[in-house]
Image (cartoon, rainbow, N blue to C red; front, side, top):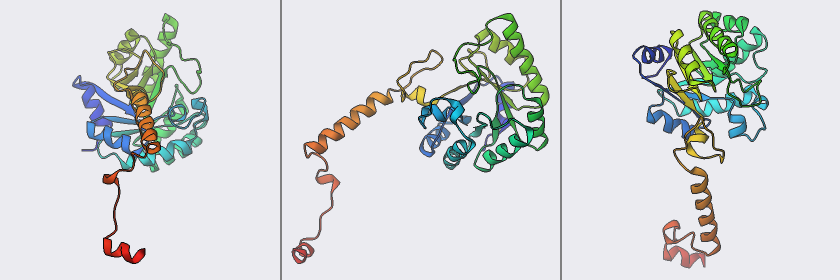
Length: 267
């Protein structure tokens, strides 16, 4: 069964946690889909995690579209969320053009940061599902600090969340806010909230796949490392290097032979 926004809404209403995770390529998407991940997110985090960019601001619509195509090939059930990157939704018309491009390349829903009233209205008017994003907004806030710690800041996020729901968004990502604020926003909204570094009481959680696998060396408080990919991969590469240098690879089990009669003719 292909998951959609109605499926996620039902999980919220039934108090079932929504599982979301980033993916940027076919084999990872295939594994996540088989594992039953609800939402696979092709985010602008692809820039710093895969493409070697210095910040999310360097990511283009073409970058997202390229990785969406790969992810879509590996997915049969998960709901695919595509990020509208920095500077790609400055006007309603620009947002619509780029959103259609992401949908054409595999996204089921698009995400944008902040309360962009006219843009969101325009997208929804054209039957495009929209996911909001409040709290830390990586496209414009380069310093990764917890947002909404004061009453004034928290109230702005709450009011923004309510405004976004009234505009008609289907779900909301809450990034790097206090747990208490994540709970309040979640309880005030009828749409699902997906938290990253926002506590235990959001309707679901999302993390960057590189972080849970230990692909990157960084250690983040908001994430949990479930595997040590970097160490295991470095060890495997080192062992391959040694085997080649010592003529241990390839071995008999890795090669093919000619028939003796054919070899005689050749020689």
